[in-house]
Image (cartoon, rainbow, N blue to C red; front, side, top):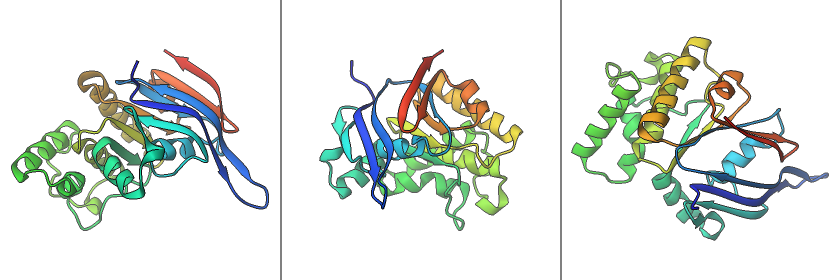
Length: 227
């Protein structure tokens, strides 16, 4: 079987007076259309693992393949291009550009891909409507609530039609209502459109929605539960 994500004995060691093994020989396979949460206490290695899967950080040892492509074989420029075309990111801090509107923030990635303007406009408007922001396209981040900003971030992550979306603590700064709204949108995109989501989270509300929960403890997988 070809997995969308496949890690084999991946480790990450941070050098220091006492070297820290943040991720310890993790082997993990993620299939298309999964809605998976990687969970664990602070310092368990979940964000480090997510960053390595996303090509934002390189492993000390082991293999990471995305749709069969080995990330270790790529140069920095090749990794940047690969992320641009294949991986969507949602972070807890939203990372929206303050001077751009919701529409402009959403199209930022595909603008760099040099996609035709008409196609760009159609895709962005469709996505913003899907996340419930069809009437906020011309609003800047300061004019949006935290939950609305995170929905723009989800639309931006999906704009390039990535192989999967990595969401690092996406609900950390949201209230309960905004969290439920965001999770409803992500679950619908997963179930109706087949978008693969992989979360790094300690939020029980996200964990309750996940169809697979991978638990890390001290950098190792301690359990892997499918529901």
